Length: 556
Image 1 (tube, rainbow, N blue to C red):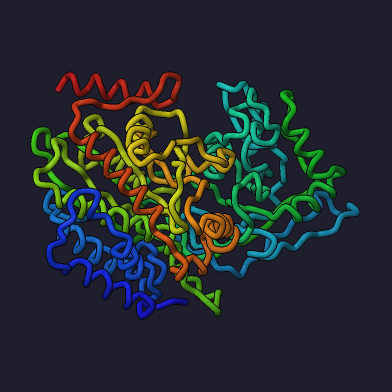
Image 2 (image 1 turned 90 degrees about the vertical axis):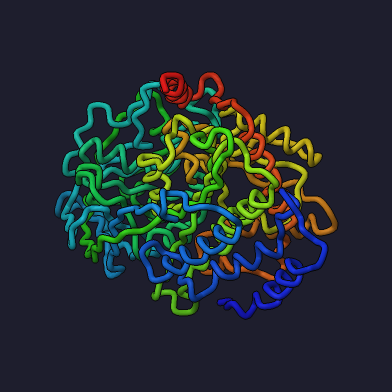
């Protein structure tokens, strides 16, 4: 674990730079990598406890980010308040649980599988009950667990899942086949996300869902599943219990192979069945039993908001977002219990602060208001941004666009800029112009199969029709350290993402992050000084919602 002592030199250097006589950088020139490390040093320190929503560290995060917003010259973004309350429930499952997979009929010549928490399976619930006891729920193989009329696909057709637990593959058939004419081919659709599979099963009335983990299809190794879904989990307070499945679970690929083998088929044969257009869900010869004991607490977390009021059209907004939360502390990890979240997403919050400072140096404010929004509970299902998008402080119909930052580049400069969800909206044209000024090019994401477009806070704004840009440094590293930068980047998902080892390292090179922030500054400045409202491209599923917003603006 690393403590603030590691950052003392950087804080000293930053102070020296800031106080250097005759130097008053303005605009994007004010964005500084040393300052970023200083912010990361505070936010990702061990005494921040992994920045879990509702933890004692939340007040520290709010105090620090607010102090930096004040120093940047911002005003409170929610009336007279720097925060927006987000009502949450915290559900902590005891890790002392075992999942039993047993033959459906007594006397069948099949072994009983006792699945260990963390090692073989992860199980949890968002039901607000101190105990969830599932006994002998019949297992049903439901392919990919998808109902998608636009793709003429229904894995639940003719299936009654009441009282049953469905077993499904992660991702969607397009990825599995790499067929560009099936779903969207290699690029994951929302139907491939774990969150959709739980939501759909709840709509179908199932008792539970067990997702089969596969590293390539999920986009991350098993350790990310076990790390992300252990410890406290959060949900928005309110709403009915009907969307909260009694059982949400994952199993490893090895366990899935044993499960399918007990039903007379290999995992590959099961996948091939699920990919058939006429696939029909089929019962498995096992039942599942598990008891989940929960500690439930209602808490109030907060989004943090600072605004730079617009001069000409203050009721129109441009929003920068980054999530401040991470995974907190897991005492079971005795060697290193703190999930520091240095890259994810102390870097994004540091970038948010740097952008606020850069805009604060301008001689005159932009025409539109710029909102700097640090949201909570992203790691628990994008909950803080969901709350804001459903309870906006500034009307979404007059929000020109959103620029999201999640895990900035700490590896080095690149000549390419990746657009996550490439080809979605006209904001990409703003990005392309800014990138060209840097001699860079924009490119589609390298791994669309991982579904990053659905995994960060911009998505909640997109669902409400607001064009939202999520871009990041590419993989074409430049300079003498290019080879080392590529190696560090490749290691991140495997060794540090959602793990206690996501800490500051001395090899960090923030030249790429600074370049990207200057891009985001240029986009935001142009967007804040135009009368245009960017739209989604033709054929995008969010375009109709945006056009409804346009009609509302014209009526005002």
